[in-house]
Image (cartoon, rainbow, N blue to C red):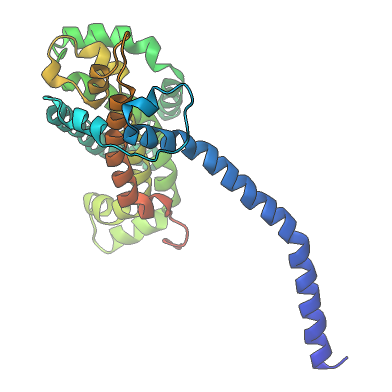
Length: 293
């Protein structure tokens, strides 16, 4: 067989393999598109309802489009007197939770991974068990605890519980990132004269940063969308309310303003999307190939 025939036969075999794999690949792509459409449809309907005029929203025959988009719902949202304060409160709570939980989780994950101490395994199991307890079951005990601490009707009543609930997940996730960094790298840094603190912040922290970003996304979304704690702990001082509480202004049992609710929900979604876009590259990156022993 000549070299030309060999190349030709190899091309034919490769073409046959591709033709066999193509139906499965096509089916996977179609399934992914269908799942994405199902997941994105509620978001599309929310944005569509925010732009629909009141007559189309209340129509008995809803349509998945509108020929006369309107900004009236957004005008009512931004015309609300305390909307700017609610937005700022949500931003303060979310940013504080992300920063504090990321710092504590990084130090805790490093401690439980790099150091050997008594009850270390028990502590890790407690972190795992803490994630299994429903938030609703702890709301009433947390209410009395916030009352005893004098934190009711303050943003601290929202910040502290969210930090506590985000830490177990963050520590467990960061533990894997810290463990993936070879100990030989730390030994080499110590030989070169780097202190433990310098290794922690100048070497380990950049390598673990992708995990910090992933946990920050979880913490940010949880704190930003919180309604249960805001409803339970902010009782009388409405100036300490957050954006989810602002939606209650448009929801009235007898005459709900669905356009206002959907417009407010759309405005709430924008910061989350912006935050996700800013961190998406770090979110999908890992330590593969970044460190070699």
